[in-house]
Amino acid sequence: MNKSLKNLLWLLLLIAISVGTVLIITSSSKGFSWGYFIRFLSKAEPLWMAAAFLCAFGFVYFEGLGLQCTCRFFAHPCSAGSAVFYSATDIYFSAITPSAAGGQPAALLVMMRRGIPAAVAAIALLLNLVMYTVSILVISGVCIAVNPQILLHMPPAPKLFIAFGTVVQIVFIIIFLLCIFNDAIVLAVCRWCLKLLCRLHIVKNYGEKYEKLLGITKQYKECGILIRSETRLLIKVFLCNLAQRLSVICVAVCVYMGVGGLFSRAFEVFSVQTLAVLGSNAAPVPGAVGVADFILLGGFRHIVADPVSVELLSRGISFYSTFLFCGILILTVFIRGRIKQGEKHGKQKNDSRA
Figure 1 (cartoon, one colour):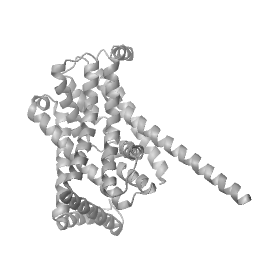
Figure 2 (tube, helix red, strand yellow):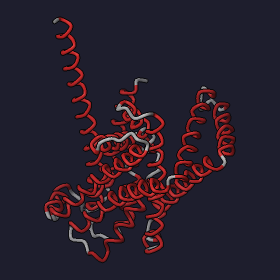
Figure 3 (cartoon, rainbow, N blue to C red):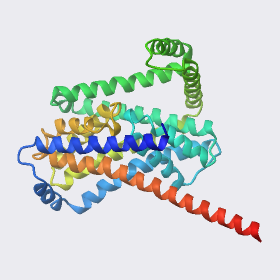
Figure 4 (cartoon, rainbow, N blue to C red):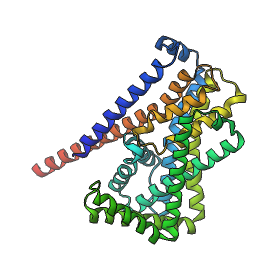
């Protein structure tokens, strides 16, 4: 299937799931109406809403800053604008594919087209992914340690999502560490799983898939060697990803404060959003739509009087506005590139005639 068509289908699926999720949330809430939601928005403090949008942009910016740090370290510097574009590509394609599977390949392709070597781009993206995972585990650990009641008050289903997300991300870190220190074990297990999937006719082309597996393991090992030898770079990228996570989490806090929330309960809102990120990060659904909403509602219902309105506004800024911004940025860069290409082609034609 053509990649463009495949991406379009994923986008349509994301839209369908998003519309369905909003309809389910609003229809199941007693007393909710869109008229009431508009009045709810009109009462929100503009400065807090502006801060929420700024935090949402920080989610894009700080990932780009992490990529910029790694590329600069390998003597392939890129501008802040280019770094934001790479980040936007990763975030956009992560949002339209299950478990964010399409983000890094798309960003890798864009970085290579702009002159960054494949090895440098791959390590930059992988290092960001590792630090991204570590940062949410650290923030979640702090939130649960400081206020364990937030997790205990969650309904059973959100707890399962949070537990699943935690296990998946811890397993990822373990696999990453094994690739650094004992990649033979990882290869042996993955090779066995791959053979089993081929025998069950779930996966085809064993040789091709195994070559990809070897390539991924090699990238993990190279990244691990870098981490062990370059502590300063590791700290920089970790701080960038920590800032990225904190930015998106703080969107919910800004929304809560903007609609008249109590400062004394702001950390509870922060903790709920943190657990929503943790629980939805590995969800096999485009953009984790539905899963993140479900966890947020489960947590907000003990904190705010109108959890549905707060959840819709918070998620609208943190996910949908960011997704829209990234999509517009990608489209703008694409159109500008086409225009420049057309002008260059036209100039070459004129020169050849002359």
